Image (cartoon, rainbow, N blue to C red; front, side, top):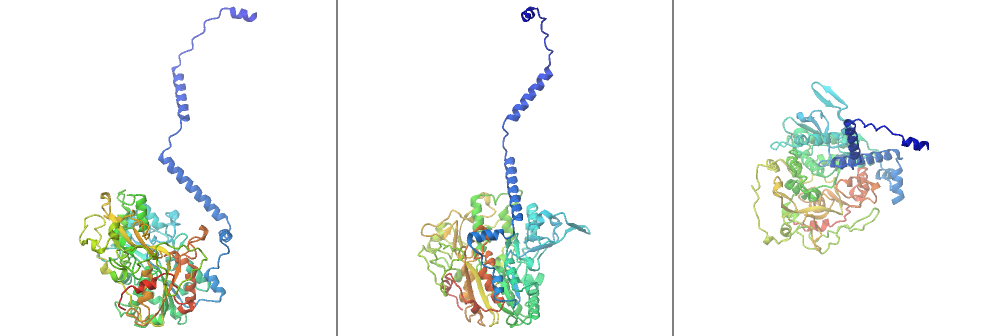
Length: 635
């Protein structure tokens, strides 16, 4: 009842609320902000890139943490659990057999595997004094700028045996790096104001990059039987310039001669075992001719210098007759891998971004290197074949995969089985179009390209008359007691000839490129991605690596007047069974073969005093002897 009474009482009229426009606007803005926060955010390309980089860095640091946290023997334990017990390294095995250091050893690195450092450069290379522009490791990338010293008005960095400097220059100043690595077109030497010199010592070519060994495994195994730096010598040289110019500018040939004489004198008269690799094989052939020649053009050692100082020359992956890959490199700055990359991402390597066209500048730089001319195929039609024939006719391109620890029975004469495949014109190193590669010689229209496609573009401003500054020597010295070994890998498809096409108008800097759409049919499986393949070590065809030892130098010939003993040692390629094996211990690839246990064992045995006959003479898996017999060369 009280409630009813109260309700019945007259109430005063409600007061109208004061007008508050400011509060309403504020509430409206708050509601709008809430709606924006609840609305899904648009995902941009920058967000994706940042997320991707963050994931990669996180995974990298996690794996690095695990790698540093795990015991050193863990990878070996896992590998042995999967594949069984690993064999002892050759050095350990031969040490148990009682072998010890005997003959001094000389290493001769090949093209691009030797380190180069800057001694003088232009303004854009300030702060890189004695820093590597080629070869080493990546560590200096993170240390650059933290250990600088001031000498006079120039800031120079403490010398490190690291590769990171090269990538700092390439990443920040790519054209500056190209400018310093290029040679003068007229002299074949460094341009004015630039001095790049080879790194000295065993560190010059032990590793090319972190974890990517070149000579390191061989050096470590030699150390197992007692070798050290006093009886091992790395004959480093500037691999960009011509062989004779290494003597003119750096006196490299004279230094090699003096070091070999010193090693022989301090080892009780024991001769040296020389181990060249890749282009180092050609360089040491030049040295043996130079050292016997009279001064001042030669070393003045006399005709018996090699006989008195060299026990054996063990050539690894030697391109004695050149490599077809050098032709495609000079022609269009590409090989099989680059051609595939261009097919996957057309135009990326030719993009005009900030004025830096990758392939054009690579071509301009490499065309100034005289070393590339030493790798050009030699012998012409007599060796490599013509329009209608080649020594490798009938080669079966289907590679037989060999697993680790598999054995392969071969004949000493190297006669393998040749498949009945379609006739492949390997002698046509460059064909314009697949139809031209397959056509008969009578159906091919010939054109004279001399003076053609000569414009003012970036590539054609380079002087191409580099043949005048290079030379090749095939005659062996007068040293009948010396031995020559040709050691190389087989069983890997290796570039032999190319199918080209015209580039598009937007890529007019390089008018030609490999036609990656050209593939062989069922009866011709040797053509893949515009490249004809034969047997080899992935870089050097066996015809180039083995012909001289199989025929050109076999017995007394005009190229071997003293009858030096020659031996062929082939190493059949077997890829690693697991990723934990790294690059494998039975690889036949051009660089990976430097870690091949069988090759290392052969080298150590010869360095310890064995001869080629002690190793078993020739060991041949390929058809090199059959192919060599097809070459009609007057000997």
